[in-house]
Length: 369
Ligand SMILES: Cc1cc2nc3c(=O)[nH]c(=O)nc-3n(C[C@H](O)[C@H](O)[C@H](O)COP(=O)(O)OP(=O)(O)OC[C@H]3O[C@@H](n4cnc5c(N)ncnc54)[C@H](O)[C@@H]3O)c2cc1C
Ligand code: FES
Image (cartoon, rainbow, N blue to C red; front, side, top):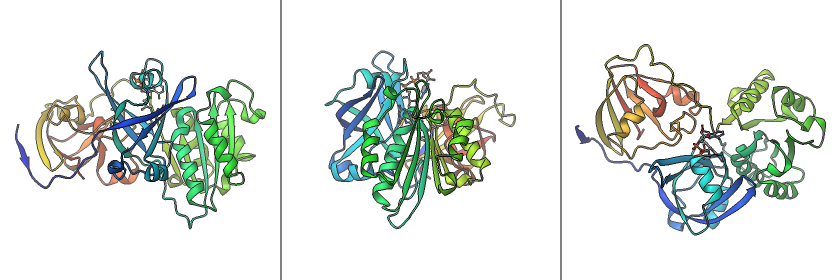
């Protein structure tokens, strides 16, 4: 294997051991984890409201390197002023990280955390007057809590309408934090709780958030026509329904931000028809170093590249988090799925390497781009 230094190294985001300051129970099955970020790391962890970070834990039983993404629910100001960085984790039964976080993680321990990234955000500006809208369900509130708090604090003339779906009142994550925000911004925060397994405040607010209910909400209590920017975060079906309803009402695609936490595993798609049967020669650029490898026709670029560069960034390996994003600078690849990259990134040649299979004999993939 040839490895050559080809250009000055650029610093890639890497894991840092952050002390856990508190683990607060939010509901029977969810906790908020607050990290105390030391002063010297605050610039490294600087983020925009709505972004997420990656945590890593080596499973003591299996030895597996478990990496998961969690959205930040605290605000950039809290990090800058107090070193406070907080995430909300809902337990997925049997889940490798969320079960550990909800049952065993305690204040005083440390967690390996990679600095924030993600597109589920906007440029807040005190001079702007906007009406933001969000449709979220369950743990999908986590990034939106940061967005609501930041929008209302930074833009004194902006308003936020939040439609928040849960099964029952007891399962509402961040109920207190939202009530506090409602108290502070009584006129500018419009908060609608929708409950699917117990009666909500009205028949319209009782049931699942689907296309029909969202349409009715937009026809009555949610001032859709006045909303400039939308944020959608929740299960795949809810996000897809909401996108379709908004598109049918003429909301431009650029005005709708979406974040998915999980997409059900589907059987691996067949190898792209144009993939070379003998595999491909791949060059990986990372931290200014080029590493060459030969990969098989049914492999994904990330899996193959990890053999020669185990420090490559990744988290979900499912096409949703974008941690494995890199640019194809020579050759072509085909992606099995993409729930994370925006059209402009695709046009610029970026791909999710966990989903990419070469369709040319040789490809060069740049993680530093
Ligand atoms: C960008 C991004 C942001 C995220 N933000 C948050 C957040 O703020 N709060 C939060 O709680 N989670 C969030 N997630 C989900 C989180 O990363 C994990 O996927 C989740 O906690 C499950 O991890 P686990 O290790 O416990 O379960 P795993 O061991 O990965 O999975 C166990 C089983 O549950 C299934 N599964 C995995 N995740 C889900 C899910 N979300 N819903 C239903 N089934 C699932 C798996 O397919 C598997 O069968 C986010 C994910 C992404 C990509
Ligand atoms: S690792 Fe999450 S999209 Fe590739």
